[in-house]
Amino acid sequence: MIGRSPVMLDLYAQIEVAVRADAPVIITGETGVGKELVAQAIHHASGRRNGPFVAVNAGGIPESTMESELFGHAKGAFTGAVDDRAGKLVSASDGTLLLDEIECISSRAQIQLLRVLEDGMVYPVGQDVPIKVNVRLLATTKVDLKDEVSLGRIREDFYHRISVLRVAVPRLHARLEDVPLLVSHFLKQAASRNGVPVPEVPDGTFSLLMRHSWPGNVRELRNTVERMAVTAHDGIAGPPHLSEEDHAGPLLSLPATPGPLRDELESAERRTVITFLRRFQGEVGVTAQALGISRRALYERMKKYDLAKEDFRG
Image: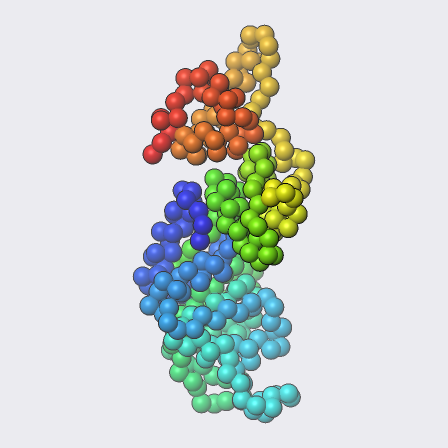
């Protein structure tokens, strides 16, 4: 996992708590933030690291086959059941089962899964003899499960059982200072995957990337960077092709004549410079890129507003 921003440090602390326990965990966050990556991190750092990690996208399983997928079935249990089949819970025994989009689990499957969490017994479809399993459940969701409980789509007892621990994964827009690190990582990955040299990032590109709202989060950034890698020319990464609205700089154009408007705008500009210097701990180069101005222009503003980079270093 990549990032040194405050919200990522908080995420690492949440993961550490989850690693020390063996209780179910709900991992929340928007689409594309890396919830499965967090689940893998929990598994591989836990006492179950030597056991299997089985990931299941509950949203991609038809309700008619969900019980068979999760709990398995006996031969002849239904039309098409030509052999015994071990479900995902059995496959994940002594390890971790990740249920992505947990809100899509049917009510009947919730009841059966609740039984597994309580006594460790799996009842395959069409079989009376249970199978003992030892599974840790991790679940992800992009919705508020309390709302799903209120709407009757998630059982309240099931909700409380699966949400013993919670890990909230931040959206990318909340940790823009991590964008340069992520871009560097994804460029190396994309270059290796496509058999091309790792390109350099043109001046000003980081500034554009760090002003984008990233509705698709890290997944959107990864796809953008891969496009930059494969469209590279003469060792320089291609353009990110972001919308025009993302290109507007955060600093303001000041009126030439003194007055109340200039005073207000200078105050706003000073606050913006301080915010970005604090975010990047006084690193002038990165701060200037994020602001969309040159290093010289940033130094001029720092001199104007009596700001020293040393004041922002932790």
